[in-house]
Image 1 (cartoon, rainbow, N blue to C red):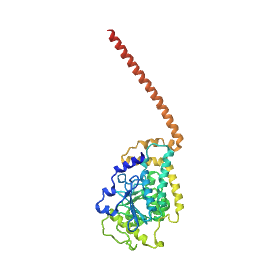
Image 2 (image 1 turned 90 degrees about the vertical axis):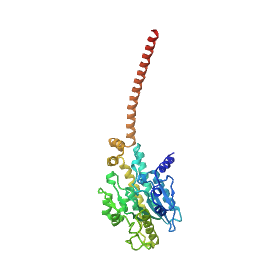
Image 3 (image 1 turned 60 degrees about the vertical axis):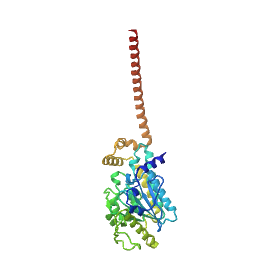
Image 4 (image 1 turned 180 degrees about the horizontal axis):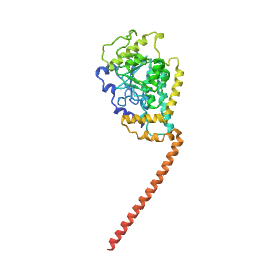
Length: 374
């Protein structure tokens, strides 16, 4: 039933890659196959062994929910197992690369332990998928990359960005700790000061050119590498549409594959895999604990207000925060007390209604009897 609902949801969200792009863009991507839930598409390897995974949930800004993360994992595992694939390029349809983890879609009532387990499992699982990928991994960032959508870039060997791309990790504003091994990966790419500016309270947002200078991005779409890997400032004369971004990503990937092993740029986790995996586990657990704390609840309430979305659930969570933080037993005790009160009230209401109906019935019978005697 759940899978059918996810498939129906995917059908209602237009395929941004093929529905909204022109003929040239479609040709650039090539034929693709949807993953199980329809939120990620996988383009088979080309002649150079480069496959393309496309986040394809544009109406939700390619935000990662459970079904989409399952599709990401399926695409990565398929590319890893395919002997024809030498590298995987990850890009997205629509205006956004990814708005990150869709915590708002987890905002249905559930016990604190269930919410924590869900958040921890999602966070640990998606970054383990990136950490475990054994081949060349290239991120082709077509638009804003936010939160987990941005920290996932720290697991790529190469990051290629459209001039429309932006990069932000608003963890402090959202009341959650950094995740995705970003405290390890970002300093390796950007230096300690650059990483702190993005991951800390400042929450600095970078444009494509600034991210290139900072070291988070390797290539902006109009300064791609040549086929030999030389001349990183060589300009391309093509338009800067999706096809140009993909062309730049493929050129950068081809140069990487053609370079001697010792000269290849590697992702920050290269040679430090177990350290990154341990960090991922710890960060996922810390994020899960944060979901019942005031900073996260206040952040979600503020975000819902800004977006004009319903705020009642987070308003209730703010009111009940001490109970939520105390754990399942406290929540269940509170629910039991509320149900007992409601139960008593409902019982009294039903007795009053039955009494009124009985009185009305008696009055009707008396009136009918009087009439008959007349």
